[in-house]
Image 1 (cartoon, rainbow, N blue to C red):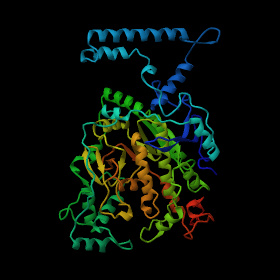
Image 2: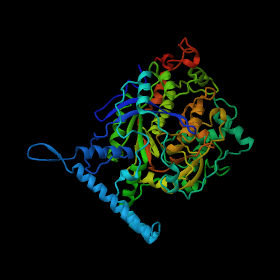
Image 3: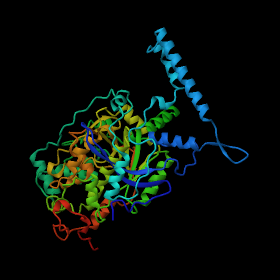
Image 4: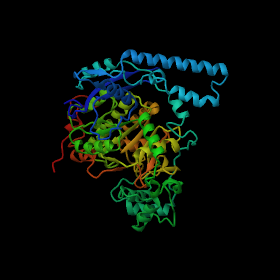
Length: 566
């Protein structure tokens, strides 16, 4: 079975995995386009003011809408509202008006002067947008038909259909204008920070917390402290509250003796009240929605079939919020050939060895169990990233299908990006549990590696969550190279969790996040089982070798390792 042959299709969506090679002297990467949405067909929506939320889709939908707008006559024929000659006359008239105005301004010496800014703005309102805005670089103006299969032949053919693209939007101009960041915010420095404790306290905590765990290189007072956060993942509690809770059970040092704040400057953002819903003005709401439509493409990662129910929920929720979005099928490694297909598509490095990684995961040192579901989850996130790169919007927002955005999600994101987010940002998590780093603004922290945990564990245990992640597309290809090499490292299976891996390299990449303490915040996780966890729990090995007779780096199906019989 091919990688996405199990993908479901609806009347408004069809999924096609198509490969597009983007080769540039400065920036060489492979991009994937998986899904083509028929833009002339809208999801169910009772609002007559509904519009798509991705810039190029707005343009395509406008073309479809104008094409289908007709004036009925008594004979039943459909007649265009404006003839071609009418449009031509309007276009030339606008051109002559603009030319005359510019010539007048130049002659009077006012062109570029602040006194003429209002007149220039009014003048540009009559200019057709096609004269000012270049076609979106990520898609042709009229999308060609795409093959519906995911075979290697169809991927190659579809890559030829899309052809090469090297032009990119001017993201530097967007940053300078304050559209994708707050250009006045300073760039915080990322450093490694740990909890310094006397040896006596460390020995007491080790005796209490180590049990059957691997004891080397770990701060067991921090383990007991952090475990309290892990046991209350959906609670909106500060780190100070977690230390008090853990010390009351004898798991860590009391705060009165040795306080430690995993979020430095906690008075800034480690507070539940910072996540309250605001009373936005009508002007703020209108500005936020227009900004969101123009600059953010939204995707939902969802496994076919087993994720259909959750997809239906988040699909309805995003429609209610009037957020145009695209479903990207996840990667299910239980299917034969899924790993090889992921390697061919670039989601997984071709040299990565599942058998070796799984063997290391089962070692007592790591004690992880099966990583089959984790492998599919990682491949899916790199898959949706490559689609976002191919689509080319300034920013991409990726939801997992068990996410629930809050009622004022759009103005929240607009406000966060334009007033709090520094311009060096590469990726921002809108929900980060057990956050470790430094508060830099009321709703934002700069993520930093947890130096209390050793490198061989990938600094694992903090900054959990990929429920809603915002990417700066111009910086994503370089970020992905560092991230992918960290995730697919057979010697560090804890790095297989993409959120853990990203946090572990946060001293090398500009990673920001919204602490989960904030209530209700931007997004919450819906109740229900994690597909990744369920797949991991269902599989275990009976040996440390693959069932494949081919070399280890060429394994075809990790799912061939035996399924646990309950």
